[in-house]
Amino acid sequence: MRTSRRQGRVFAMQILYGVEISGNAMGEVITAVINSLKIPKDMQDYGMKLVDLVQEHIAELDAFIVEYAKEWDLERMAVLDKIILRQALVEMLYVEDVPIKVIIVEAVQIATKYSTDDSGGFINGILNSFAQDRQMLGRQN
Image (cartoon, rainbow, N blue to C red; front, top):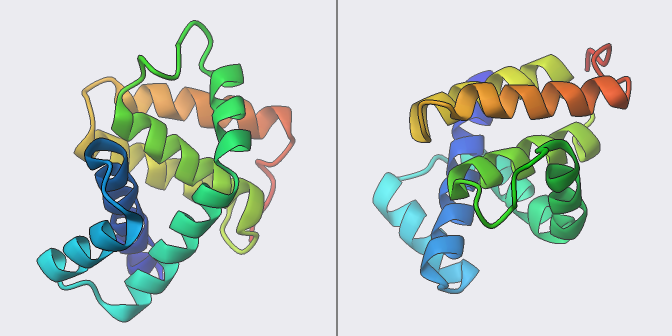
C-alpha cells in the first residue's frame, strides 16, 4: 500500500496543480492526468480521496499554512509547496491510518523531487511545527 499511497499523493498533487495553474475544470484535469499517466485504480482512489478532502477543507488548510509559514504570504508561496502542504495537512487531520511521521517524510520527499531546492526544508519545518503544536507526532496509525 505504501507505493500506492506515494503514487496517490503525486497523482493528487498533479490534479490540484493542474486546476490551480490552468483554471480548467477539475473533471478535465483528472481526465488529462489519467490519460497521460495511465494511473492504476488503487492510486486513483487514494489520490481522489486527497483531492476531495483538500477541496472540502481548503480554507482551513490555507489558514494553517498562513499561521505556520511565518513571514510568507500564501500568494507568494510556490504553487507546488502550497499544494503539498495542503495535502499533508489534510492527511494529518483527516486520514487517521497513516502515521504522522510518514506523512511528513512523504511530503518532504515529494517536495524535494518536484518543487524548488528549498522546498523540502520549508515543508518539513511547517509540518513538524504543526504536528508538535497539536501533539500529533506520537500517532502511529
